[in-house]
Image (cartoon, rainbow, N blue to C red; front, side, top):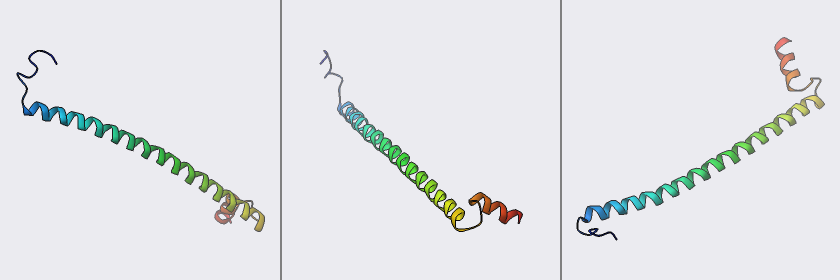
Length: 82
C-alpha cells in the first residue's frame, strides 16, 4: 500500500472498487454468453441450411423420377409457360 493510502479513503471508494470488480466479472460472463449464442446461431444455421438443401434435392429428384418434368425448375417453367 502506498503511503497515505488510508488517509483519504472513505466508504465511497470501497463501494466504487466493489462495483468495478463486479462489473468486470459480469462483463466476462456476458462475453462468454454472447460467444456461446454466436456459436449456437452458427450451428443451427448450418444445420437448417443443410436440411433445406437435402429436402430440396429430394423433392427435385422425386419430381424427376415420378413425373415427366425435369425437376423443380422444369416443373416451374412448364407451369408458368404452359
